[in-house]
Image (cartoon, rainbow, N blue to C red):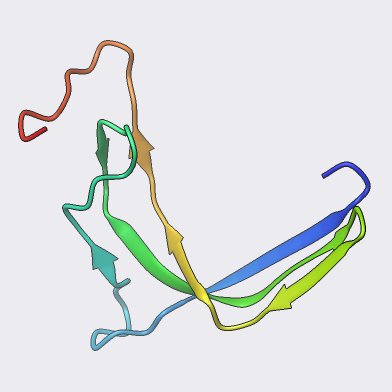
Length: 79
C-alpha cells in the first residue's frame, strides 16, 4: 500500500447453530468456475491510513470465499 497502513479484523457471524458458519451457496463469483459458498462474517475493525486518506469502519459485512480455477476446467453448464 505504498506509504499507507491498513488492517481488517473479521469475526464469524453466529447463526442458529453456533458451531457452523453461515454460508450462502449457489452464488456466482465473477468468473470463478466454482466456489464453496460465501461464508458470512463481519468486521470488528477495518481501517486505512495513508496517501492523505484515513478511514475506519466497525461492524460492516464481511464475506470469505474460496474459489476454484483451472485453465483446463470447463464453464458451469448453467452459464
